[in-house]
Length: 108
Length: 364
Ligand SMILES: [Cu+2]
Image 1 (cartoon, rainbow over the protein chains, first blue to last red):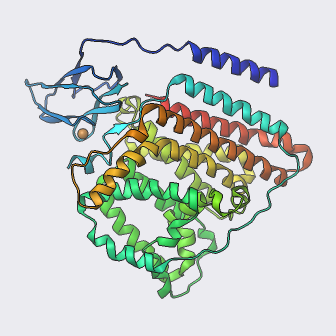
Image 2 (cartoon, rainbow over the protein chains, first blue to last red):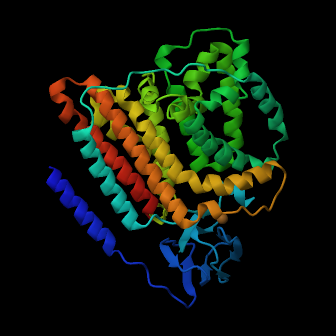
Image 3 (cartoon, rainbow over the protein chains, first blue to last red):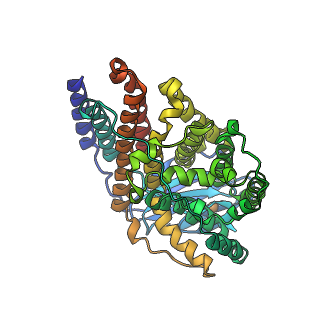
C-alpha cells in the first residue's frame, strides 16, 4: 500500500515538474469574438502586452473588459473594437452585458 | 451600476499553477494515509463546549443605529466582502462573533419564550445560507430583498423563540459558531470541534458552505459558461447536493457525528478562495463605507506568489486538521477491529474534496 502511494507521489511530482511555463509573446493579442455564438476560452496574456478585441453582435450590447474597465458598444454591422494594454495581473472576464461571457484573459 | 450587476470585484485570482495543484494533492494523499498509520489508536479529544457566550448588546444596538447611514453603493462590498468573508475569518481567529454583535439579536430580549422545535434543528440555517449564497453567486441584484427578508424572519423568530432561534436558525450565527470552534485563542480547537452539537440539518449546513464556495469557482470558469443553457442556480444546488451526497455515502449512519470534521476543510477553502477578495476589495469596502468613491486598492498583499502560497497553505492546513479530527472521532464511534477500514471512505473523500478544491483553483 505505502509502496503504491510513494510510486504515485513520484509520478505526480515528475509530471508536475515537466509542465513548462508558456513562452512569452511580443505582438498584440488579437481576438475576434461573437456575442451571438459565444465560445469562451481562457487566453494567456503577458503582462504589458496589448490586447485588441473585435466583438460582433446582431443586437445592440455593451461589451465590458472587467478589471481594466474598457467599455464599447456593438450592434448589427458595427462591431465593438476594444484596445488596451494588459498592465495588471489576474484573471479578467470579457463579457457582453448583462452576463454573456465572451472570453477570459489570464494576465501574468 | 456595473458593480451591483456583477457582485463585487472585477478580477479573479490567477489560476493556481498546475504543479502546485498536483504536489498539493500528493501531499494531502500521502499525509492522510501516513496519519492513518501513525496517529494515536485511542481517542484523545474530550468534547469541551466553550463557555462564556456573552453578547455585547451596546455594540448590537450601535450597529443597528449605524446601518441606515451606510451609503447605498457600499452595500454589496459591505455584505459580500466585509461581512461574509470577514465574518468567516474573524470567527476562525476569535470565535463566534456574530452572536456577539448581531444587530438583530436584541429581538430575543422581547421574546414570547416559546420552545424552539428540536426537529427543525439547523434546517432553517441551512436554507438561509443557501438563499444567501444564491444571492451572492447567482443574483446579486436581489441583495436588498434578501436583507429585508433576513431581518424580518430573524426578528420574528427571535421574538417568538428567543435566543434559541438565533443559535439554531440564523444561518450566519450557525456559520460563525461552527467556524469559531477553530479559534486557537479559546482552548484546543479539536475539543471544541468534537463538541459540535449533532442536530438535524447539520450536514446540510456543512454541504451548503462547502458546495457554494466550490460552485463559486466552477461558475466563473469559461467551461461552465459554455454550458450556458444550464442556469447558475441549478449548478449551485447540484454542487451542494453532490457534496452532501458524497459525504453521506462515505459516512453512512455516522454523517452527523462526523460532520464537525469537515469544518476545517470549509475554513481552508474559504480562506484560499476569498483571501485576495478580502485584502483587496475589503479596502474598497472600507473606502465606500466612509463615503469615498473611486478608491484604488493597494494590492501588495495579493501578489500572485502570495496568493498562491496562501491558497495552498490554507487548503492543506484545513485538510490536515480535518483528517486528525475525523480520525479521533472514528476511534470513539467504531469498534476496535473496524477502526482502520472504517476510516477509509471518509479519508478518501477528504482527499477528494481537497484535491478537487485545489483543482478548482486551477480549472478554467
Ligand atoms: Cu461587466
